[in-house]
Image 1: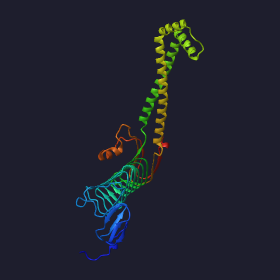
Image 2 (image 1 turned 30 degrees about the vertical axis):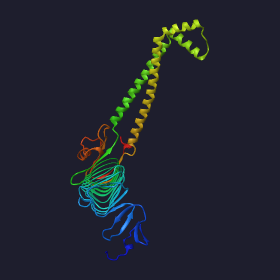
Image 3 (image 1 turned 45 degrees about the horizontal axis):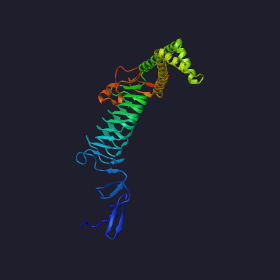
Image 4 (image 1 turned 180 degrees about the vertical axis):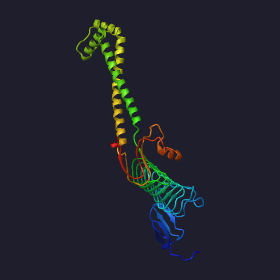
Length: 380
């Protein structure tokens, strides 16, 4: 028999005590997940899964959660994988966190592992080292990070050292020896690290591809205009042939109800129809081709307008601002080609190499001091 105890001391949040003739019971007061505190033996029901034992080969192995919320208080050991949606980690993470577009919050450190949440958000309050942090289409907020790969749509970092960073919008308070690529990049202080410069690639639209696409559309438009002109002339010449001109005139008047034909006249019209059958067919084909090319011309005008709008949209917000430079820093343009694999789709080693590619675009800034403020719209 157990020793006497107070059942109320075991009833934690989300539970209540029910009494009956059979005794006292701890009952769930809300829908949720059952948690047992192994230190106090207290039972609680929460709206999220809370684990205090950590994720390791000994305790859990790899884990995958279907619930929206998960909170981990123990360490996630190296090599272990945690899958879920909105996840909070109160302790160090050495493994791999995979979110289904949700929120990843790491209150301590991420070391040698990874955190990925496509379209979601990642926030690390401690340090991140030798890690992969990826939120394609989402937001990343970091404190201190070194020797890591960071990929997102919007990235905010207080201190980045020897990192490879790619995003549309990047703001780093202090960057040292990093390779960066983005459409809008702001660095408050830029420094080299062990003679390795800060390399900033500003993503700009590829002018050669735009010009080629525009030239191809204009060529197609010119060809359509020429065809319309040729077919219009051909149709006019066919319609002016005496026999066909007479036949078309009679048909038009019959359709309008301006004339009626006697039996003998109907026979004459049939003989005339047989005589003009071939030029009539040629006239119909010429008119159809003329109409088709007019539709093609309208579509080409729409495509040209769309291409110009797309090109203009790619230039909006493209800028780089370095508030202060205190070490070798290089800023240059980088114009990806449409047929090339996107930067954020490359394997890690190719991603790093691409950011540092020697054959990048126009050099905008190269110095170890000063400041820099540039916008694409003002580029000459």
